[in-house]
Image (cartoon, rainbow, N blue to C red):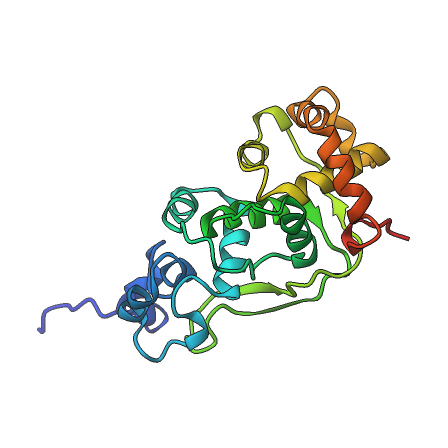
Length: 240
């Protein structure tokens, strides 16, 4: 009698052959595109990868990393923030580029690093909701069969924004990261401040928190910014 052999079930065949499916840091994981330089990405994925995904300086990676880090700020988010120190790349991964660019122009000489922009994009995604934002769902890498789907947002923003409920403000790591990086996150902070002034329902727990403390300490600059921003930035205008 022939010895018993353990054959791979057909349903498991792809998983066994392609071990990347099992790994949290595998060749189909968008992080493997977005953490490395251009040459690193080409080494990992080969020449068939779309040119738009070579390296981490592209809108798809920027948007993916913000969405990933808003779900769970992990070691990859820390590494990305520390590794990417260039200051000449534009922020193409924000949901509301109009607000971000206006704030950076207001601050004049501020030059955020590419890693700092991830902090801003993450807290923007975490704290604000854009009901009219144009978005679509599709694979991260359309050239890879098992590439996961992600949400693709328009960088321009669309219409007014709403503030999400922020839990446990004084111990919230995203609030802490925002206040540790106030210049790159200035437009998000200003939008939260505007909600606080308008007494929007989701800002009731701002009172007595470190957010309120920051608002009071920087009230003059925030008020000056709002005077310029409200008539010009759609996401700062009232939702009708």
